[in-house]
Image (spheres, rainbow, N blue to C red):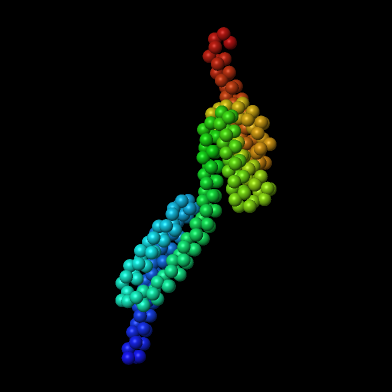
Length: 231
């Protein structure tokens, strides 16, 4: 009888281990599989209820596997292991979301800079609109720097870089729109907020645009004088 009981217990342990192996494979699939949460990055990870959706799927699978076992002893052995596995899955999800929240913050910051640069370019001759874009980027830098614990010198360097990008876009668009005077006036008013490398590039562009305008004006006057019989 003891031999039969021992064999039965060994079988129960094996069945519980086999069941746990299946659940562990499900956990791996939920983590690293084609639809695993580890594949979700940035906003896709942060803005999705991962704990609820992946936790529910894990619980469902654990319930199905547990129901397939032969007796309560097997289920007791399995359930203890399953509870630990679910706790580990939850911890892994929380860690992943925490790491991706930093990625998401960078995505939002980059998105703010990108969209406000486009807005400033489109409104290059509207000082109030450009000022609003600069203000929003300035706030985005403050938020990003605070979140990442950046020192003041790095925060200020980011502000200078992003402001330079805005100013460069406005001036470049003004030149493209053949409003050299506006471009020159804008540059002189904002050159202290532009980094040296960008400033040098803009000064070169302004000089070349100014020379072209002088040439165009001269050619225009020359053509007009040739077509005027009185001259």
